Image (tube, rainbow, N blue to C red; front, top):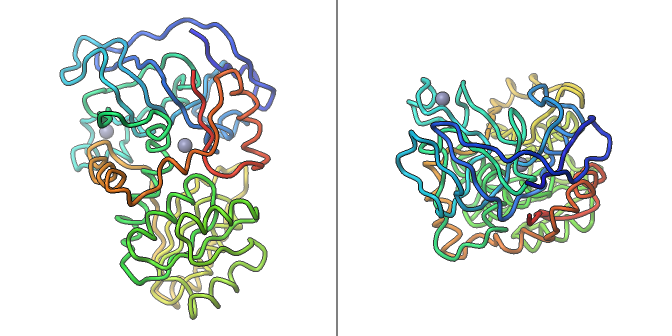
Length: 342
Ligand SMILES: [Zn+2]
Ligand SMILES: [Zn+2]
């Protein structure tokens, strides 16, 4: 199969012919129809993720068709159109037993712990736990956006942040996950202030339902001003020390900070103002993707037309463009989600 191969961290990746994957007894191989290019792929390419072993194929936001099925898989068949959360859970550990597959202690992650979906084929573990059937006619590009950024934003806003109608929500970072969070919060009836250094991303945030979109410079003061003293809920959808701290400082008393961006150690450790956390009884929460069994709620929101999924994908490229698209994530020159089509 053809795949985008990383042979050296940070050096240009290349399109290469590599061996086809075979399914584990509990897994499947999926023929990739579309795969999103995400900031965490960029981190993997840069060598920021200890799980990644070279040579490596990135990619974890995928949709496609089941092409091969392991002997122990019960619920899936060749020809099924599917997507998956970026965490592929084991299904049997205590977290999985409690329904929290997104923090499975024995998880694998395509594109991190193994080869990912910047390829014609990708192997996925524990298919009966992790695959999500795509509704009839659901576009592969839209589905590719679901598995990481949209699902992450959905759960961060609705479940972890528990956003209610009428609340002010600040979203720091208006890339794929940030824009998704803006749209989900707006659909929930919240009043959203988006923060991003890029004018194009701010423009897009307004079309996704933000009431205001402000520059990163001076964002804390701007958010506090626009929300009458601070947001009820604030999300760091970037994952850098400055955006994490800025998000906590954007809150009103008793506000909830939700960490969504990944904060790789290479970017430095954030200094969370714990004095504000105690004085204002702030809540500091983490949100790490969403389990496959939670997807029906999200798919229902999309089906109702309350979430502009198609508009989130701003660029479709051939797999050949993968190495360039990966490098562009670091420069953050594009707004919305880029999808590769093998
Ligand atoms: Zn992702
Ligand atoms: Zn597990």
